[in-house]
Length: 395
Ligand code: PLP
Picture 1 (spheres, rainbow, N blue to C red):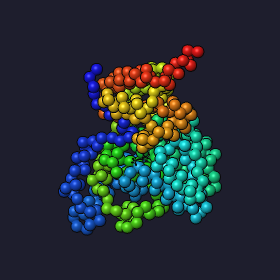
Picture 2 (cartoon, helix red, strand yellow):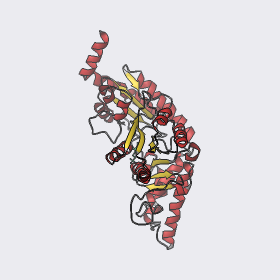
Picture 3 (cartoon, helix red, strand yellow):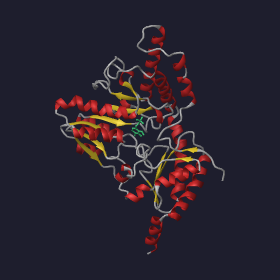
Picture 4 (tube, rainbow, N blue to C red):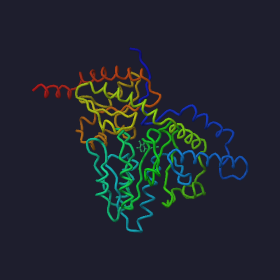
C-alpha cells in the first residue's frame, strides 16, 4: 500500500482555496487603502468592503446592514451573547438557554456570565445529539434573555432543528442566536426565512484564511460596543478593517454557497462509505444521528483504542484526522460532546472524527478504509482494555 497524504480534518480548518487567494492578492499590494480615507484608494477600499458585506449577507439571506465583520467565530459567539445580556440586564433578563454540547466559545461565555449573576440552563442533547425544541420551549422563562443553540455540532456533525427552535423563541419573544460555524457553506441557510435573530460564521472553515468571520444580527436588535475607537462596523467594532481577509472571506462565502446541495450530496456519498466501512469493525458505533448530519462529518467510537494513539498512527500513514475537537485536544478529559451523548469515558476516549469535503476523492476514502482497520487492529492487539473487553464478551 503506497502512503498518501489525506486531509480529513476540515472541521478543524480548511485550506485557503486558489480563487479565494487570488481575490485577496490585490488588497495586499495594490488596493491597500484604508477604507476610512477619503481619497480614491480609500474609497475603493470602502467599496470593496461594502461589496464583501453584500456578498456575505446575500449568501445567508440577510441584508448588508445586518452583517458585522469580526475576527473569528469565537468573537462572533462571545459578542452575540454578551451584547444581548448587557442590553437586557436592565430589563431584568438574567437567564440564558444553551445546550450541553456547544463549542467552548459559547460554553465559556455562558460560564463567565454565570459568575456575573446570570443563570444558565444547559439543555440535554440525548443519544442522537439533537436538541428538542420542546425542551427549549419548557426552559424559556419570563427573564430569559437569549437562547443560543448551535446549528451543527463540530465534533459529531449533527444538525439541530434550528427553524423549530427559532419559532419557539419567536412565540415567546426571546432572541435566538445560533453558532453556525460548522454549518455555513455546507447546508443552505436563509436567516430571514428560518427566523434566526443572530448567527455566527467563521471564514477558515470554508476555505478563507484564519482570523476573519462575521456576526449576523437581525435589524432592530441593538448591539453593544465590542471595541471602542474608530467608527468601523457601524461604530460597534473599532479597528481598521482587515480588507484582504474580508474580501477573501466574501469570495469563500460566494463559492461555498454555489451548488451547495449538489456538493453536499456528493460529499455525503463518501461520508456514508466511510461510516459503513468503519462500522464493519467490531465494537464501533456512530456518534450522533445517522441522517441529520453534515455531509462531511463522521464521528465513530472505537472500543479498545485510545484516540491519541489512533491519531498518531493515522498521521504516520499520512491521514490527518481528529479525536474530539481541535480546541480541546491537548486536554486529557474526554470530549464533553461525546459524554453528553451518554458515552462511557473509555468509549469517548477512543473516538475518531473524519471531516471530509468536496476535495475528498473516492481513492482517498479507499485509502482511509484500508488504513483505519489495520491501525485499529494493531492498537487493539496491544491494548489491555481490548483484552478485557474480549474476555468479558466470551463469558
Ligand atoms: N463554533 C464552532 C461550532 C466551531 O467549530 C468553532 C471552531 O472550531 C468555533 C465556534 C470557533 O471558531 P474560530 O476558530 O473561528 O474562532
